[in-house]
Length: 338
Image (cartoon, rainbow, N blue to C red):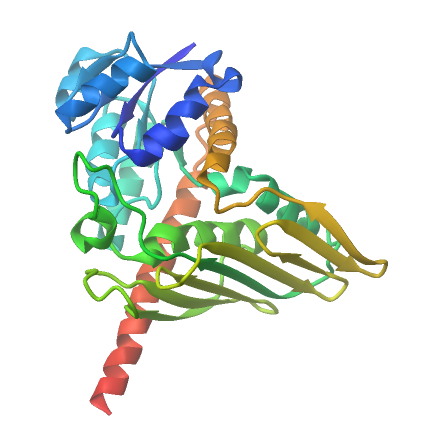
């Protein structure tokens, strides 16, 4: 049995991580024995979810008082580097919400610290554990669609999700906490999915704008194109829509896949075939995705598997985020200069 602590008991923890830890598939392999959160009121939540767990309001008290094997960091990006560094220095395995940190500048030293600690590190790239994206990956990797020429991913939202009311519900739209807007919050998922499907892109183009929510301190819309030798990947994200929806299209030389939020349709030489899929915009689905991620994390701890593939993937996500903001800013400056 592996003992662990959750750092940050906000919405993503209580709605996704906690139910996964309490599920039958995970509870037999690991248990949460401590929780750290800067919000004192969350002490009651801990008693509700984990009656025997200890509660702390600062990282030093947690690490000095508990004997734990791992931590699960569920706090906003601007805290990740601090918490990862503190835990890694004590040889504690780390699973951490995306993105790796709030700024590309801090990535090299943080990655060096993780590698030197000889620990299991896994980013919360939970989409790779969903039935939809695993199915699409299978079609692509086995060549059922032929050579992929175009992939498009669309995410429509009305606004940014709110954080916990007990702390700062608008942290996602505060660049000092989040590191960016919808590109960081949602685009990070599609940057690691792009790696999962196609590898690391050769270059990218990006347009980031605030079209509706002018009170946000970050962009509410992002259009990014990732370029591969023979494949273009388009990622279209917005918090400025009038409905909540997800869709995806994968076009290859032998077939295509189209997802409309309800079903996945494969069209090949035998015509269209419908593959039922859960709605990936329904966050209740995340619980099983996290459970799959946590199971792999625990398996790696047990096997002492310290491969840095997850860290590499997270580093590439940070690089693509940084490049997207730089490219979009340069384009805007060029237009302004003219």
